[in-house]
Image (tube, rainbow over all chains, first blue to last red; front, side):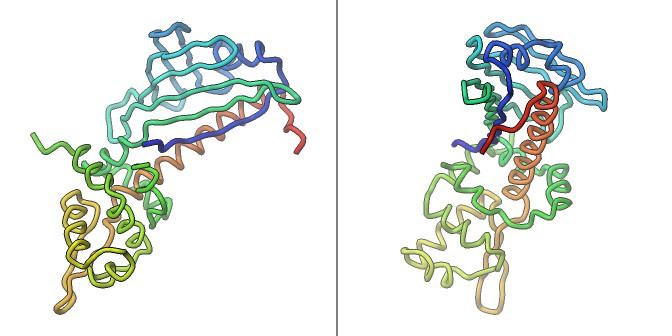
Length: 142
Length: 110
């Protein structure tokens, strides 16, 4: 099962600078969340909060300085979307700077949550007018 | 305790023929086992067996049309998950947009 979300951008920064931008609370507050606490060691705690409400809490899984940060997180508010996913932020050198690749995985649980009668996701889905299921079953079970 | 939904869903989706059935049904129309069997390299009986498993997992539902039973995809579970994953992707787009601005990024040349 490998359903995932992948995004990447290139920052005009050296790798060590890019690492700071994706791991230091002062920088993370500029782009990831309004409140950020992160204990940058394996097994360390990560706590994120947004001014608009809501928060996420998780655990740092892997810290490979200037290369890779992996953490698990889940929303603080119990609810149908309360599933734990894993985020991997990888850095590598490219022309013009450092490529930041974000891969979030663990969405298999969503199918299960939805099966359990998840009306919140359901309303949301229909609002988005997503009336077909596309290739998702294949991706879920790949 | 209710039955383990993880087990039910993934047992249902673990079988490649059943995923094929789901894909055919994702076109949206309610179809009969006979129609499905024409699109799959298996017998009508085998199709019916797979449809029963999918129905038990809540992924498809059946309705009677005269003498025929037709099956369609249940709109909930899979579309919900697809929509949510899109939403997660959109979140990362905006986060990384902020990161790019924060880092004074310019797009790499193509």
